[in-house]
Image: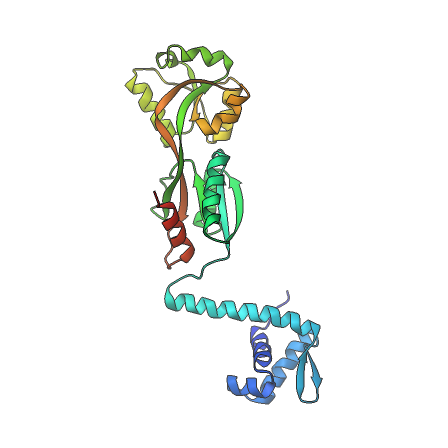
Length: 291
């Protein structure tokens, strides 16, 4: 394995910054022969970094490349020290954005537009299932994630901000469309396709059936909204989903409206609580707490 000697790189960086070995040696308070020796070792590893012209040191093309990286490395190191001293994170330049599969693209696009409207951050979007995205969020590999519900098993380490909502209805393939005539009584003993226990939408449907004295028959329990839509289109049962979520299937007559739930489907932006003051997190919290 190749190892980079950061002490040697730091000496090289300072020689460039101060313009000569003697000035860098005086600033660093080390002997000039020692500094020259360290530079020689670095060049032995990386190739010629300077051209010697009389008493001047001129960077070679290779030296310019090494200096560019050295400058970035040590400026970021100084930034890190400042972060730890101030207890405040620097404003990052890129945002890693997670989008749960099944969340309407309109909700995701609206959220991205709000983020881009007040910042010039580069945004990278990652799609996936809720458990995978949550793990990445908690590991610090994603900055924010749009979920179709608030996940309760995060130990209070994730804050949730509402980013959108939509009316929820019951929908089914064409053989179920006649259920609309006597809704909601017509749903009694009808096979349903629902998310798992703990999902707010599942709880809303269960409460709806109880209030209307109906027998809830769960045919399939599916973890993913996209899968629920597909199963509904295939005629495996009636689904309960938001209007925006099923818009394309309804337009294509793959799903038909049966009736509405009184509750709305809410979508949340999850962001991990930080132990240091984070300008990006503060911006997001401020932006999405606006009414």
